[in-house]
Length: 521
Image (tube, rainbow, N blue to C red; front, side, top):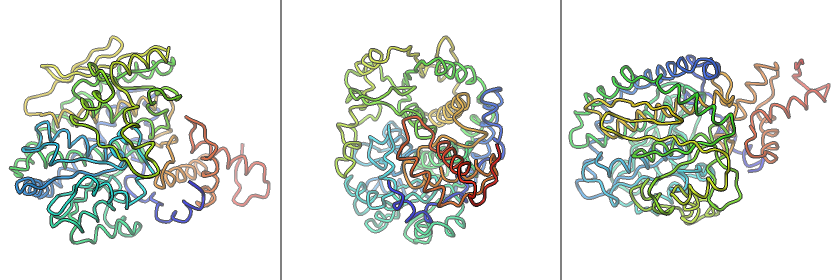
């Protein structure tokens, strides 16, 4: 990505005014709690989620209308599609799988189809360059067989993702069944600042559900509260498609459990133990049991959020990721993927990124028994197994001698379990990264600047750090130029934000006449 590429469209991707990009006032000491008081860290993250769920509950009447649209579509023999990018793409595919596991009556592989930018391979590594292309959203939708009468349910945390908007607008043009667009930022801000979002919000043929719940617990980390509320709204609508009036009581039961009865702090010893393993230079292998997609999602999303080495491909000369996945009993990579997805994968076999999106590329991520054996042979450092299983009493966690069971009360189904486990795992992995120094306060100083939205986020964080700690106010476009130059030189596991800060500081130290200079050692 060159400097002119971004600067020519930079005005469209300056998104710091969005709720999903702002820091949360409750979590300003998150990095300190991660290092010094993990129970307090979990308690505060629980409180942020609790507040988000309370705001979410107020939108239930709109889910009921979505539930009716889902049932209407399936009853006449048409198909339901679920679309997203990154975290929302993973939740779309997860909900497809849950639907076929009994969440949605009448669902099967032919009539409920989840997809994300870059295809199923992007479950492992987001294909960010797909996310910036609305035409790719429309093309993937068409490739999957979307036709007149089909229903598209689109989710985007920010409400401005080009891929999702492209798919949504294509669905509105092709089907008499209105597509649904779910998002987590205030309408007035999106209308004022993002033209492509304004088009969707003003389109009469697109049904909208605004699920704004405020800032994320970790600034910009939309894999947390935003993706939780999106997954809950769509999931409960699916579950109650035959009786939308049943959503309210069912959601309240689940909300009371995760917000008030579930003991989040029992996760703290696991967080400390996993952090200690990484500090020693060891690795962690997750055995997800029945929760393959939920555990895969959390472990995969650690990489772009905190600039960690991503899951490596079997047979490639790539460094090992800190954590990996092991689907026990799967003899081949293809079998492991079918156990996770409960169907054959849907890769994308076109475009200049085929080497990243194809079926062959997907098989290279080998979570089978043989893949596990090869990894532990290749990487000689200790591999500690983190097992997650479902027993009679609830969800049991086991890691390095620690064993805890999360009791699951009656009335909580597989959707509710996965949503709760998602929230706990998000808190767990975020606090691990705080233990390892991968963010400051509640600000992501490690971020992968691999698409326009993330480049903008990185630029904003650079400017904020320069102003907070060095009293430097550098124009946005000047920071962008330096950041894009540093990006070309970036080595694996280096933080683009901090590298750019250093580059700008070095420039201002050397150039005595630099404008706005107020740096002092």
